[in-house]
Length: 115
Image (cartoon, rainbow, N blue to C red; front, side, top):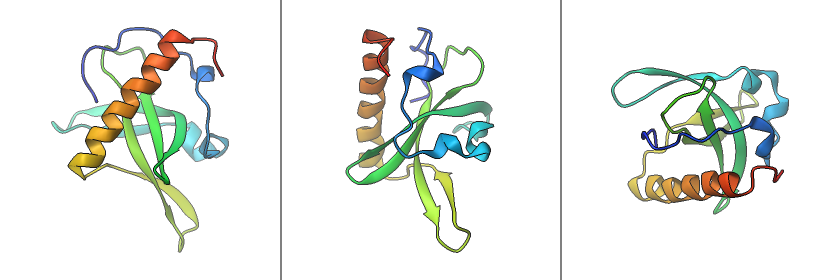
């Protein structure tokens, strides 16, 4: 994901938070995400969803950017009783989430007022 072809405007209210993470102040503030080259990206969660019984979060750049967002896996630490985001390391899972990402973005582009 993190490619250079997403140039249409996205409004945060257009996405749903299926997991309820956006109610947590820690998740509302955003995250610094490192890409493969070690560059920092200031991003925020705009949608959470479950795919194949695994929770994920769609993150987009806080400021307008020519770069795409990314999808991270949402995991839960029972000892700390908190959620955290984790990179997707499995190649097949990454490919599936790339397809899901494209569908989510295309649906938002086609139905900008859909909530």
